[in-house]
Image (cartoon, rainbow, N blue to C red; front, side):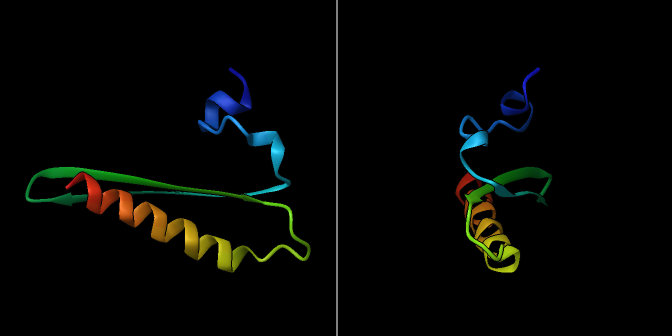
Length: 66
């Protein structure tokens, strides 16, 4: 299995850094999942800002699946 398949990121080699945020929430017996994936090349690497954006993207996915 290639890294692209493992992480489900077709453009994995396009960016130097990646933030991947998977969120799963149980609500009334239902499981809702969302995923945020952001790649970037900036230096210095601002992981905090990109992590926040990926987290919000994952939460939006959770909300959309409910």
